[in-house]
Image 1 (cartoon, helix red, strand yellow):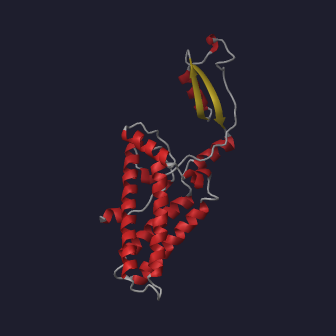
Image 2: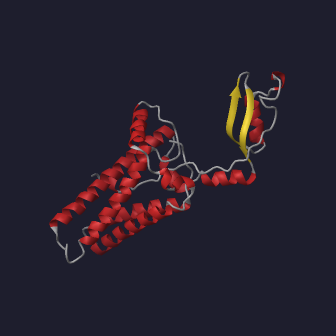
Image 3: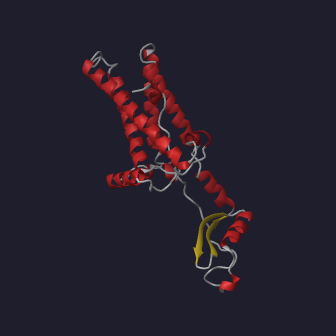
Amino acid sequence: MSHPALFLSRAAVAAFGALSLSTAFAGPQCTNQPQSAWIDAGKFQMELKAQGYEINKFKITSGQCGERQNRQTGNAMSATADAERVPLAIRLFHWALAAAFIGAWALEADWRAAHEWLGYAAAALVVWRLAYAWRAPADWRWRALPHSPRKVLRHAAQLARGRAELAAGYNPIAAWNVLAMFAMLLAIAASGWALTTDRYWGDQTLQALHAALVNLMGWLVGFHLLGVTVGSLRARGFLPRSMLDGRRLPH
């Protein structure tokens, strides 16, 4: 595995948060006004944005009638703005996990004690993330991760044809890659710990397994980086930036 792939860790791709909406309408609506009273759709949208509204749906019917549905105001807009950012806890977790994995790999030969403790730290971070998935904001919970094999294959086919929809959340492929990296890090830490016990000290078979798991993790990280690159191209932006400033890009 090349050094660049091993020197970067997973980037939690991000997702849209739960929206708190209040249904309201402003201006003439398509369903209760004669066509002569309709407002131009573009002008209507501009007026709404000037009033500070964020438009979740903007329905266009025949004659370019503008009808606004589900606007956000006040606290709802603020809540949505927060929900559409990567939580600070996730960002700190991401970089801490990357640092722990990189450090453990880089210090394996010369700093065995540091190598071991960084490995334990990586495992502890994964356990924290799995626990956090029960109480995290909606799009960072368990339900945002699992996808059926059928969805994975369909998404891969759509992606290959350039027809996959842009979304800020975990796509089916990324979701399984994240889970695989979590599982691999726990397996690496467990096998590494076992090698420090009297029973398995110096066990060549377990040492080979431990090394193989690290190599597999490197491939998973490389696949993750490929996904980040593809996502950045699709989003026409730098996707890793979301793990710095919290702003998510549909990709």
